[in-house]
Length: 328
Image (cartoon, rainbow, N blue to C red; front, side, top):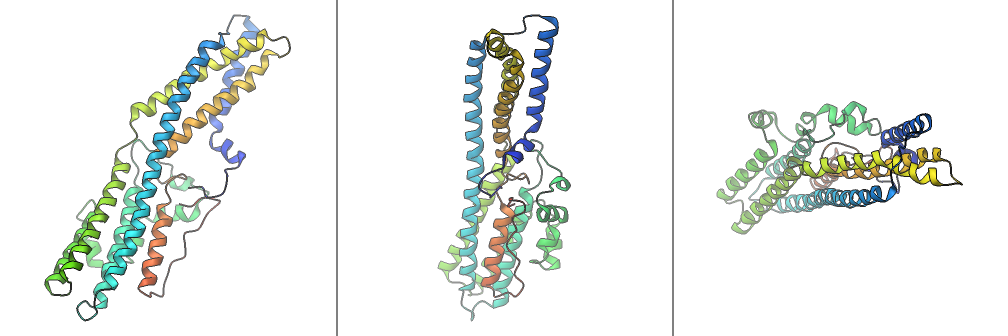
Protein backbone atom coordinates (compact mmCIF):
# COMPACT_ATOMS: atom_id res chain seq x y z
CA UNK A 1 0.00 0.00 0.00
CA UNK A 2 1.31 3.41 -0.96
CA UNK A 3 1.24 5.70 2.09
CA UNK A 4 2.55 9.02 0.83
CA UNK A 5 -0.02 11.69 0.03
CA UNK A 6 0.00 11.19 -3.75
CA UNK A 7 1.62 9.05 -6.37
CA UNK A 8 3.90 11.24 -8.44
CA UNK A 9 2.96 11.72 -12.10
CA UNK A 10 6.16 9.90 -13.06
CA UNK A 11 5.26 6.85 -10.92
CA UNK A 12 1.76 6.79 -12.41
CA UNK A 13 3.07 6.99 -15.98
CA UNK A 14 5.78 4.41 -15.27
CA UNK A 15 3.20 2.00 -13.81
CA UNK A 16 0.88 2.41 -16.82
CA UNK A 17 3.23 3.39 -19.63
CA UNK A 18 2.45 0.42 -21.88
CA UNK A 19 -1.07 1.52 -22.94
CA UNK A 20 0.18 5.10 -23.41
CA UNK A 21 3.00 4.02 -25.73
CA UNK A 22 0.80 1.53 -27.59
CA UNK A 23 -1.96 4.13 -27.94
CA UNK A 24 0.40 6.69 -29.45
CA UNK A 25 1.87 4.13 -31.87
CA UNK A 26 -1.55 2.83 -32.91
CA UNK A 27 -2.90 6.36 -33.46
CA UNK A 28 0.19 7.34 -35.47
CA UNK A 29 -0.30 4.30 -37.72
CA UNK A 30 -3.94 5.24 -38.36
CA UNK A 31 -3.06 8.84 -39.25
CA UNK A 32 -0.08 7.75 -41.37
CA UNK A 33 -2.23 5.34 -43.38
CA UNK A 34 -4.83 8.08 -43.82
CA UNK A 35 -2.19 10.50 -45.13
CA UNK A 36 -0.49 8.00 -47.44
CA UNK A 37 -3.49 6.18 -48.88
CA UNK A 38 -6.11 8.93 -48.69
CA UNK A 39 -8.69 6.30 -47.74
CA UNK A 40 -11.57 7.50 -45.51
CA UNK A 41 -10.38 6.03 -42.21
CA UNK A 42 -12.45 8.38 -40.09
CA UNK A 43 -15.74 7.52 -38.37
CA UNK A 44 -18.35 9.88 -36.91
CA UNK A 45 -17.62 10.60 -33.25
CA UNK A 46 -21.22 10.38 -31.98
CA UNK A 47 -21.64 6.56 -31.98
CA UNK A 48 -18.11 6.14 -30.58
CA UNK A 49 -18.96 8.49 -27.71
CA UNK A 50 -22.02 6.33 -26.88
CA UNK A 51 -19.72 3.31 -26.56
CA UNK A 52 -17.41 5.43 -24.38
CA UNK A 53 -20.26 6.22 -21.99
CA UNK A 54 -21.08 2.51 -21.67
CA UNK A 55 -17.42 1.65 -21.04
CA UNK A 56 -17.20 4.39 -18.39
CA UNK A 57 -20.19 3.01 -16.50
CA UNK A 58 -18.80 -0.52 -16.65
CA UNK A 59 -15.35 0.53 -15.44
CA UNK A 60 -16.97 2.52 -12.63
CA UNK A 61 -18.87 -0.58 -11.50
CA UNK A 62 -15.73 -2.73 -11.71
CA UNK A 63 -13.59 -0.28 -9.72
CA UNK A 64 -16.26 0.18 -7.08
CA UNK A 65 -16.52 -3.59 -6.61
CA UNK A 66 -12.73 -3.93 -6.48
CA UNK A 67 -12.50 -1.21 -3.84
CA UNK A 68 -15.17 -2.99 -1.77
CA UNK A 69 -13.01 -6.13 -1.73
CA UNK A 70 -9.93 -4.19 -0.65
CA UNK A 71 -11.80 -2.26 2.05
CA UNK A 72 -13.44 -5.42 3.39
CA UNK A 73 -10.00 -7.03 3.65
CA UNK A 74 -8.71 -4.05 5.63
CA UNK A 75 -11.69 -4.17 8.01
CA UNK A 76 -11.13 -7.88 8.59
CA UNK A 77 -7.52 -7.28 9.57
CA UNK A 78 -8.54 -4.35 11.75
CA UNK A 79 -10.74 -6.72 13.74
CA UNK A 80 -7.86 -9.21 13.94
CA UNK A 81 -5.73 -6.50 15.60
CA UNK A 82 -8.40 -5.84 18.23
CA UNK A 83 -9.12 -9.51 18.92
CA UNK A 84 -5.41 -10.39 19.23
CA UNK A 85 -4.91 -7.74 21.90
CA UNK A 86 -8.04 -8.90 23.73
CA UNK A 87 -6.96 -12.54 23.59
CA UNK A 88 -3.47 -11.81 24.94
CA UNK A 89 -4.85 -9.65 27.74
CA UNK A 90 -7.35 -12.36 28.68
CA UNK A 91 -4.67 -15.05 28.80
CA UNK A 92 -2.34 -12.91 30.92
CA UNK A 93 -5.16 -12.03 33.33
CA UNK A 94 -5.68 -15.66 34.33
CA UNK A 95 -4.71 -16.31 37.97
CA UNK A 96 -1.07 -17.33 38.39
CA UNK A 97 -1.98 -19.89 41.06
CA UNK A 98 -4.08 -21.86 38.58
CA UNK A 99 -2.26 -21.20 35.31
CA UNK A 100 1.57 -21.10 35.13
CA UNK A 101 3.21 -18.19 33.32
CA UNK A 102 4.99 -20.60 30.95
CA UNK A 103 1.61 -21.82 29.69
CA UNK A 104 0.41 -18.23 29.15
CA UNK A 105 3.53 -17.41 27.18
CA UNK A 106 3.18 -20.57 25.10
CA UNK A 107 -0.45 -19.69 24.26
CA UNK A 108 0.48 -16.17 23.14
CA UNK A 109 3.48 -17.44 21.16
CA UNK A 110 1.27 -20.02 19.43
CA UNK A 111 -1.18 -17.27 18.64
CA UNK A 112 1.61 -15.26 16.99
CA UNK A 113 2.51 -18.40 15.03
CA UNK A 114 -1.11 -18.52 13.82
CA UNK A 115 -0.85 -14.88 12.78
CA UNK A 116 2.34 -15.21 10.72
CA UNK A 117 1.19 -18.48 9.14
CA UNK A 118 -2.10 -16.85 8.11
CA UNK A 119 -0.16 -13.95 6.61
CA UNK A 120 1.98 -16.28 4.51
CA UNK A 121 -1.02 -18.42 3.51
CA UNK A 122 -2.79 -15.35 2.14
CA UNK A 123 0.28 -14.36 0.14
CA UNK A 124 0.40 -17.61 -1.86
CA UNK A 125 -0.27 -16.91 -5.53
CA UNK A 126 -3.48 -17.79 -7.36
CA UNK A 127 -3.93 -18.28 -11.10
CA UNK A 128 -6.05 -15.11 -11.48
CA UNK A 129 -3.62 -12.87 -9.58
CA UNK A 130 -0.73 -10.92 -11.08
CA UNK A 131 1.95 -12.95 -9.24
CA UNK A 132 4.70 -10.38 -9.58
CA UNK A 133 8.08 -12.13 -9.08
CA UNK A 134 9.49 -11.29 -5.66
CA UNK A 135 12.91 -10.39 -7.06
CA UNK A 136 11.30 -7.66 -9.19
CA UNK A 137 9.82 -5.81 -6.20
CA UNK A 138 12.74 -3.39 -6.11
CA UNK A 139 10.90 -0.68 -4.15
CA UNK A 140 10.36 -2.85 -1.03
CA UNK A 141 13.63 -4.62 -0.11
CA UNK A 142 12.52 -5.82 3.35
CA UNK A 143 9.30 -7.30 2.00
CA UNK A 144 11.27 -8.95 -0.80
CA UNK A 145 13.55 -10.56 1.80
CA UNK A 146 10.55 -11.67 3.90
CA UNK A 147 8.91 -13.38 0.92
CA UNK A 148 12.17 -14.99 -0.18
CA UNK A 149 12.77 -16.45 3.30
CA UNK A 150 9.25 -17.84 3.58
CA UNK A 151 7.27 -18.87 6.65
CA UNK A 152 9.72 -21.09 8.54
CA UNK A 153 12.13 -18.45 9.95
CA UNK A 154 9.21 -16.43 11.31
CA UNK A 155 7.08 -19.20 12.77
CA UNK A 156 9.94 -21.11 14.44
CA UNK A 157 10.46 -18.15 16.78
CA UNK A 158 7.08 -18.96 18.34
CA UNK A 159 6.79 -22.75 18.17
CA UNK A 160 8.93 -25.48 19.69
CA UNK A 161 10.53 -27.87 17.17
CA UNK A 162 8.13 -30.73 17.92
CA UNK A 163 5.05 -28.65 17.31
CA UNK A 164 6.52 -27.22 14.11
CA UNK A 165 7.28 -30.72 12.84
CA UNK A 166 3.77 -31.92 13.67
CA UNK A 167 2.29 -29.17 11.47
CA UNK A 168 4.02 -30.56 8.38
CA UNK A 169 1.34 -33.26 8.07
CA UNK A 170 -1.34 -30.62 7.36
CA UNK A 171 -2.08 -28.22 4.53
CA UNK A 172 -3.66 -25.39 6.53
CA UNK A 173 -1.33 -24.44 9.38
CA UNK A 174 -3.51 -21.62 10.83
CA UNK A 175 -6.49 -23.95 11.27
CA UNK A 176 -4.41 -26.54 13.10
CA UNK A 177 -2.86 -23.92 15.39
CA UNK A 178 -6.29 -22.63 16.43
CA UNK A 179 -7.38 -26.21 17.03
CA UNK A 180 -4.37 -26.68 19.32
CA UNK A 181 -5.31 -23.49 21.18
CA UNK A 182 -8.82 -24.84 21.78
CA UNK A 183 -7.48 -28.17 23.05
CA UNK A 184 -5.14 -26.38 25.45
CA UNK A 185 -8.00 -24.27 26.81
CA UNK A 186 -10.04 -27.43 27.41
CA UNK A 187 -7.12 -29.11 29.18
CA UNK A 188 -6.54 -26.17 31.53
CA UNK A 189 -10.28 -25.91 32.19
CA UNK A 190 -10.47 -29.58 33.17
CA UNK A 191 -7.55 -29.06 35.52
CA UNK A 192 -9.51 -26.26 37.25
CA UNK A 193 -7.27 -23.53 35.90
CA UNK A 194 -10.15 -21.73 34.17
CA UNK A 195 -13.55 -20.65 35.38
CA UNK A 196 -16.53 -21.65 33.27
CA UNK A 197 -17.04 -18.04 32.19
CA UNK A 198 -13.42 -17.52 31.12
CA UNK A 199 -13.41 -20.88 29.36
CA UNK A 200 -16.46 -19.99 27.24
CA UNK A 201 -15.24 -16.44 26.57
CA UNK A 202 -11.81 -17.56 25.38
CA UNK A 203 -13.44 -20.14 23.11
CA UNK A 204 -15.56 -17.35 21.65
CA UNK A 205 -12.38 -15.44 20.86
CA UNK A 206 -10.98 -18.54 19.15
CA UNK A 207 -14.21 -18.70 17.18
CA UNK A 208 -13.71 -15.07 16.11
CA UNK A 209 -10.24 -15.92 14.86
CA UNK A 210 -11.73 -18.76 12.81
CA UNK A 211 -14.27 -16.27 11.43
CA UNK A 212 -11.69 -13.67 10.39
CA UNK A 213 -9.43 -16.35 8.95
CA UNK A 214 -12.35 -17.70 6.93
CA UNK A 215 -13.33 -14.23 5.70
CA UNK A 216 -9.75 -13.55 4.61
CA UNK A 217 -9.59 -16.89 2.84
CA UNK A 218 -12.90 -16.18 1.09
CA UNK A 219 -11.49 -13.00 -0.45
CA UNK A 220 -8.26 -14.79 -1.31
CA UNK A 221 -9.75 -17.91 -2.88
CA UNK A 222 -12.82 -16.43 -4.60
CA UNK A 223 -11.76 -14.09 -7.41
CA UNK A 224 -13.56 -11.05 -8.66
CA UNK A 225 -15.91 -12.72 -11.21
CA UNK A 226 -13.86 -13.13 -14.35
CA UNK A 227 -16.79 -12.36 -16.65
CA UNK A 228 -16.83 -8.80 -15.25
CA UNK A 229 -13.06 -8.39 -15.30
CA UNK A 230 -12.70 -9.82 -18.81
CA UNK A 231 -15.66 -7.96 -20.31
CA UNK A 232 -14.39 -4.66 -18.93
CA UNK A 233 -11.01 -5.25 -20.56
CA UNK A 234 -12.36 -6.24 -23.98
CA UNK A 235 -14.88 -3.41 -24.32
CA UNK A 236 -12.11 -0.99 -23.32
CA UNK A 237 -9.98 -2.40 -26.15
CA UNK A 238 -12.86 -1.97 -28.63
CA UNK A 239 -13.58 1.60 -27.56
CA UNK A 240 -9.90 2.58 -27.60
CA UNK A 241 -9.45 1.05 -31.07
CA UNK A 242 -12.19 3.39 -32.34
CA UNK A 243 -10.92 6.57 -30.67
CA UNK A 244 -8.35 7.60 -33.36
CA UNK A 245 -10.95 7.05 -36.08
CA UNK A 246 -13.44 9.32 -34.34
CA UNK A 247 -10.92 12.04 -33.50
CA UNK A 248 -9.60 11.94 -37.06
CA UNK A 249 -13.10 12.80 -38.24
CA UNK A 250 -13.15 15.82 -35.91
CA UNK A 251 -9.66 17.13 -36.70
CA UNK A 252 -9.84 16.66 -40.47
CA UNK A 253 -12.95 18.85 -40.57
CA UNK A 254 -11.29 21.63 -38.58
CA UNK A 255 -9.67 24.50 -40.44
CA UNK A 256 -7.63 25.49 -37.38
CA UNK A 257 -6.41 22.10 -36.10
CA UNK A 258 -4.25 19.66 -38.07
CA UNK A 259 -5.34 16.02 -38.24
CA UNK A 260 -1.97 14.88 -36.80
CA UNK A 261 -3.25 16.17 -33.44
CA UNK A 262 -5.28 12.97 -33.47
CA UNK A 263 -2.14 11.14 -32.28
CA UNK A 264 -1.48 12.86 -28.91
CA UNK A 265 -5.16 13.26 -28.03
CA UNK A 266 -5.93 9.63 -28.86
CA UNK A 267 -2.90 8.43 -26.91
CA UNK A 268 -3.94 10.38 -23.81
CA UNK A 269 -7.57 9.20 -23.92
CA UNK A 270 -6.52 5.57 -24.47
CA UNK A 271 -4.05 5.85 -21.57
CA UNK A 272 -6.70 7.27 -19.22
CA UNK A 273 -9.21 4.49 -19.90
CA UNK A 274 -6.63 1.73 -19.50
CA UNK A 275 -5.28 3.43 -16.36
CA UNK A 276 -8.75 3.35 -14.78
CA UNK A 277 -9.14 -0.30 -15.76
CA UNK A 278 -5.70 -1.11 -14.32
CA UNK A 279 -6.51 0.53 -10.99
CA UNK A 280 -9.52 -1.75 -10.56
CA UNK A 281 -7.54 -4.74 -11.78
CA UNK A 282 -4.85 -4.26 -9.12
CA UNK A 283 -7.35 -3.51 -6.33
CA UNK A 284 -9.48 -6.64 -6.65
CA UNK A 285 -6.90 -8.98 -5.02
CA UNK A 286 -5.85 -7.35 -1.71
CA UNK A 287 -3.65 -10.30 -0.62
CA UNK A 288 -1.62 -10.97 -3.78
CA UNK A 289 1.76 -9.83 -2.42
CA UNK A 290 1.82 -6.71 -4.58
CA UNK A 291 2.48 -3.03 -4.06
CA UNK A 292 -1.23 -2.23 -3.62
CA UNK A 293 -2.00 -4.94 -1.07
CA UNK A 294 -3.61 -4.46 2.31
CA UNK A 295 -0.42 -4.11 4.42
CA UNK A 296 -0.79 -7.35 6.39
CA UNK A 297 2.97 -7.64 7.01
CA UNK A 298 2.91 -4.27 8.75
CA UNK A 299 -0.29 -5.14 10.67
CA UNK A 300 1.22 -8.46 11.75
CA UNK A 301 4.34 -6.68 13.00
CA UNK A 302 2.21 -4.22 15.03
CA UNK A 303 0.45 -7.14 16.72
CA UNK A 304 3.75 -8.92 17.37
CA UNK A 305 5.17 -5.82 19.05
CA UNK A 306 2.07 -5.33 21.21
CA UNK A 307 1.87 -8.93 22.39
CA UNK A 308 5.60 -9.31 23.04
CA UNK A 309 5.57 -6.10 25.07
CA UNK A 310 2.65 -7.50 27.08
CA UNK A 311 4.92 -10.45 27.88
CA UNK A 312 7.79 -8.08 28.82
CA UNK A 313 10.01 -9.75 26.24
CA UNK A 314 13.42 -8.20 25.64
CA UNK A 315 13.74 -8.88 21.92
CA UNK A 316 11.06 -6.72 20.31
CA UNK A 317 11.06 -6.37 16.51
CA UNK A 318 11.09 -2.93 14.93
CA UNK A 319 7.96 -1.58 13.22
CA UNK A 320 7.70 -2.56 9.58
CA UNK A 321 9.52 0.05 7.50
CA UNK A 322 8.02 2.24 4.79
CA UNK A 323 10.18 1.57 1.71
CA UNK A 324 9.98 4.23 -1.01
CA UNK A 325 6.48 5.15 0.12
CA UNK A 326 5.19 1.54 0.23
CA UNK A 327 3.98 -0.16 3.40
CA UNK A 328 3.54 -3.89 2.90
